[in-house]
Length: 405
Image (tube, rainbow, N blue to C red; front, side, top):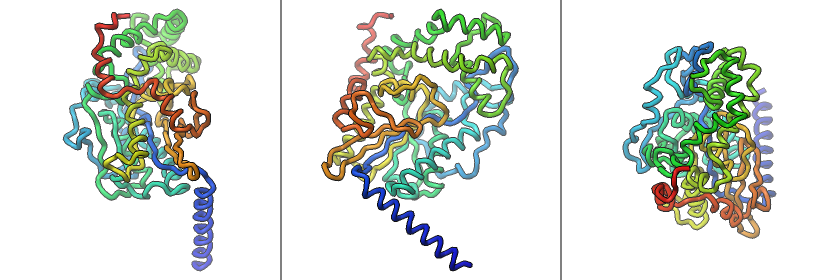
């Protein structure tokens, strides 16, 4: 019995290795570098819809599963102490019904990121043996916004990707709030605040959005003087649905309109037809992604073994990135959504290519001749929006050249 199982096991294992080897050899593209931008997992809402049936956001919804635990530390970008976290502090100044804070990663959210890690493991360790099967700090770089849900999401992804196996402590790097470039930073960039800040409020006064907002407030029985918008409604609605918590009955019939109007709002806010808006939202981040690629190709990096960059971010990061890449599908990115950039080298020609995927689906970037985008075409597509630090800061401070719109 044991001999048979052992034999069957070794045959299966042998064929698996053969298919991997075969697959690697038949592909003309050799993987060189992976960069993943991912949204955090399911969380408690940022605000509750006022005057409606309340959901109970109890602490039991936030228990960390044992399989998501790893040995990790949070530092600044230089490896020093973690910077202050004013955004997180603002969440912890409020308490939701049920006793938890707004914007906190839940058990479900932790599992979603663990599952994303498992998906990446299947692709980059099992199907194509690219990464070392246990966490190796020389191979993997992890940066997160300095907010607990994104830090915990990064931790859970790493736990899934490396199955809690690690050769060294996992460092998760963060930056000061005023310098953050992993989301559109209205506080750190004066020009962005001037160009876009007022558009959030304006978006709810657009005729179609305003009419639907009035109707939904009436249907929900919310006082018309309460400040409400479709992004807030969607946030609470999706958080409740994801965790099986009750929705106000009136909201059931409005689900698709809420989804559509929230996206309409975000498009009005970012106004992607104006290049400078998207530059200020994602320019420094795009610059980093291009630098990582260039360093790998030129061999100029001080970390030659680096194979994977992980960036733990937000829906408000992914949407302007997708807009700038020309592949935004007019749908709000779900929890744990990812944009993955893979750098390849052609085995015969030695030319480099970049492949972009969104939630596991390959994307053909406008300006690219193929899904495997020749590097010069990819760089041209991103160069429209990428901003080196110095240029970004100069633009951010140039508010005198841009009268309030």
